[in-house]
Amino acid sequence: MYTREYLEQYPYFRETIEKEGMQGIFDQLTGVISRGHILWFTQWLMAHQIPFSFAMMDLDNFKFINDTYGHHIGDGVLVRVAQDLAAILDGIGLVGRFGGDELLIVNLRDLTYDAAKAFFTQVYSGKVLRRNVPLENCSPFITATVGCAIYPTDAQDFDALFELIDKTLYRGKNKGRNCHIIYVAEKHKNVVIRRIAKQGMYTAFSQMIRQFELVPGLKNKLRSVMPLLMEELQISDLYYVGRKNVLHAVRNSEVAEPVSDTEKLLRSDDLFSDNTLDKVKARSPELYKVLNTWEIETVCVIRIGMDMDTDGYLICAEPRNRRIWQEAECAMLYFLAKMLAARIRIDGEVLE
Image (spheres, rainbow, N blue to C red):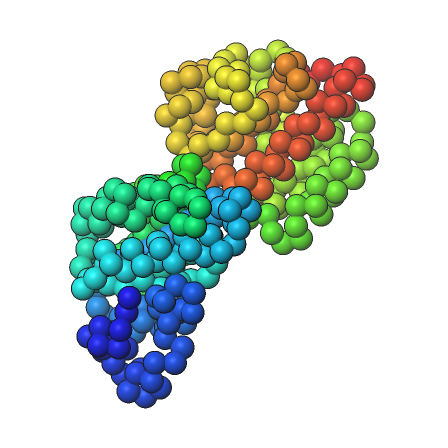
């Protein structure tokens, strides 16, 4: 692990140690650089215009490890991953702990997309991740999700750079975790991360129920919840397909597009979300044709129904907006779909 002699090869740490000594430089659990100093180090590099790649690693399913094996095993996993990362970065960069199960990686050598990709290929090859870590009476399999961007290629200030690694990290989680995403402007510049966090999901759900029950009729109920959905999901409209296989918009009454293959997109699932239209094109050509005409790049589709009966579909789609659909956002749309399905059975009304 890091020693005083090792750190003093970096002018930032040499100056810091001369002024303040070693106190506070290391994270007490993992032994890698503490949150404050790894962040100050990156800002020092920027102030001196020294290029580096910057990444955040978030261990996958860490709560499951803690709940299944105990927190002492979770601590052991975090220590082992941090130490192995430090070893693979020996001589080219540093590892710091951001907090919880998140680690920060500063790499001073691999400064192009291809070089960064080669570095993370090593990390995921079993040297650090995608392997069992032998600990006390267990050997949990360890994976993680990483988001990475490069200074100054991708961003010229700290806040902008950190936003990019946050964005690419969430892109990796949206893809299913256990992967690394390196920022590429043409792919990721329009990715939008939305979080339902202002008042919490309980408040959002209770508000939706109140608005939903105020008015009769399925179409009126959908219109009643639109202001809340627009604020929480940052959408301009919501679409639905009913029993007649016609796609309508909640707000724009002029939208009426025949779409008969939406069910092929979901197959046996209640939810489909992606920030490209590749799968839509392959599975549901009619829906793809409509979305592509509207220049939509991302879609989230929720089945309206109970058990095996399907009453229609809710479709969230925004033009020219390659956003990441977060779990809380999908949960909000799923909740609305279930409320609609319940009212269809209670009132006998059909969504058309």
